[in-house]
Amino acid sequence: MKIVPRVRVEAPVNPTESLAKVKLACLNIFADLAFVQEGDVLVGEGSDLEHLRMLLRNQKIRDTARGVMIRNRQGNATRFHLNKQAAYAGRVNFGAGAPLGDLAVTIEDGDLDALIDRVAESTLGHRLSGTRDRTGGT
Figure: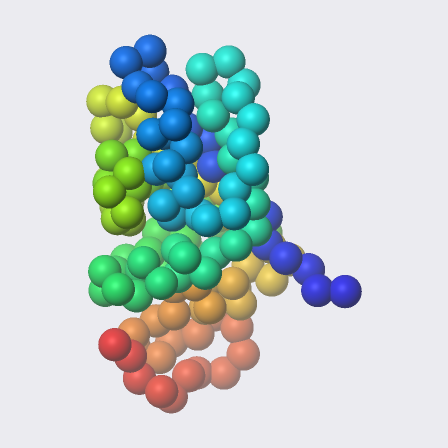
């Protein structure tokens, strides 16, 4: 049985915002989220990190993402915030503190080091799990 990562995204929905647009912001980063609303917070859960991986690669911010994930890991989880407006535009931005609130992301996995190596691989070939990757980076 393959163990899949668990992704949880919490997004505040302000009275001036469209619930559909906040959902879209979340789905632009994590494609398979299923949503429930808890008061004024939209909570999405899923397991697919491939779209996030592709965005990090296309935006050339893998090392930044890797640093954020490593710095914020606790046990088998890592937590970070993404800018909601950037996510709505299909971009990953780790800047927190936006006036309308941020997307609070928690990713859990039994082998978090391997997950970070896969989603935000080092452009310098550094690995958290196993041996050093000698493919170099882009």
